[in-house]
Length: 113
Image (cartoon, rainbow, N blue to C red; front, top):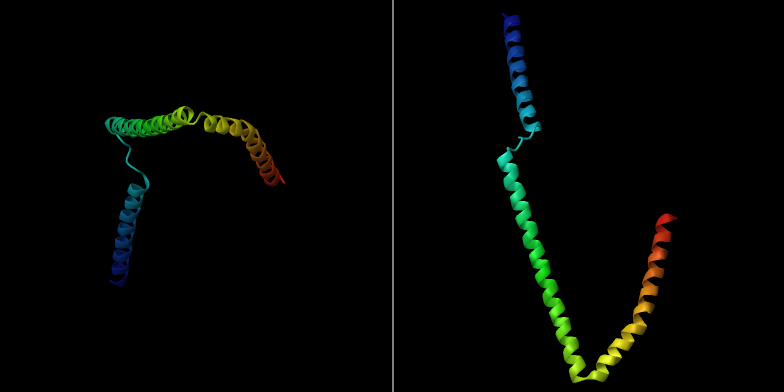
């Protein structure tokens, strides 16, 4: 009597463990998407990428137009100021470039050592 009760408990335990293992197996393997779901995800990704590109392009165009307008207005309203800006940019740009390259080389040297 005791032995059958113990056997019964062991059998229930094994059954429960088997069910739990099956649940773990089901959780461990993700469902494989169908071709239609893959197409839909691809379409959504392309759409999001297209929207992001259009947004970046419009921001770029607006910035370019603002800069062109500002420089054109400066050139026609105050040509001397325009020339001063151009000459200072011509002089300062190589200096700034040299400083940036020098600091970049120092940082790369620190990384390697």
